[in-house]
Amino acid sequence: MTAAFVILAHRKPEQVARLANRLAPHHVFVHIDINVDDSLYSEFCRLLENLPHVTLIKRHRSAWASWGIVAAVLEGIKTALDQAPWTHVMVISGQDYPLMSSSQMEDFFNQHIGQSFLAHWYLPSKLWGGDGGMYRVKYWHTPFKGRRVFIPIPRRQPKGIKHVGGSMFSCLSREMANEVISFTQREPEITNFYKHVWIPDELFISTVVMNSAYKDSVIGESLSYIRWSNPGSPHPDELKIEDAPELIRAGKDGSKVGGYGRKKLFARKVYIENHSQLLDALDQAAKNE
Image (cartoon, rainbow, N blue to C red; front, side, top):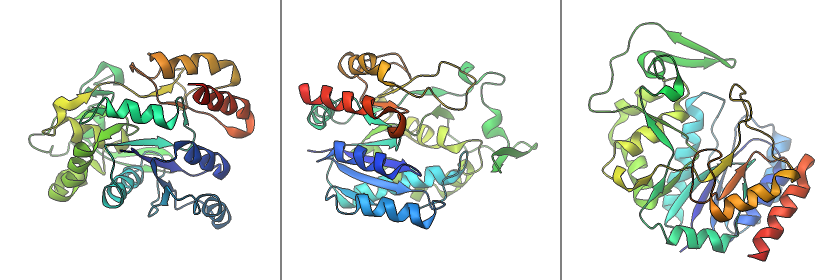
């Protein structure tokens, strides 16, 4: 049984195509931001449309801190549920790259049937400082030109819901993925509430997952190696060829970088034009296993 991967992309068509190729024969569903210009989108289509395991999905505006990113993830998960059999769906970015072969990934998922992987934290949490991140859900928010805009009047909170922070870049079992999509359909008021929290992609999926009947099946681990040398930076480190040995070990033995994980399936962020040697090294390591 193969897995499914939802890739969120807005740049580097060649790198996204290389990533998609490496994931074969697993099912791959690619979301290209609707703001990508026509020429770049055409290049994505040219490189991806003839790959039999790849599906291009309906496009959304997925600007930073907007609900559109969540909409893109939900679109990918729903399309995957409708079109393909699989045991797990994993959401990744176009700047991720595998740390193990497709067959090793399948072995990993087969060892964790019915389980999901999501690093998460209940609010308030010291991870988000100050009031523990409660301001994110207390007030109505929207991003405007990359800035936070909010109305300083407390909102009515959804009943029976515990707010949970976490990354949308998670791995969900098929049962959990079904629950996430079902929730958006049966709880439109709560879903609409989360459209105007601050940075909804760090709240909505994790909240639905950890308030569901399947929450006990969630393993609180990250399956991606993401290094933040500067915690105050808006972006994680750009990984280089010098990082190859550590990344290869993370794929074999796990790592605490990016949040503890018994094994890391992917590394982020990698850029093909600067670090193709790293991608080559990771490809070779996977072949040698």
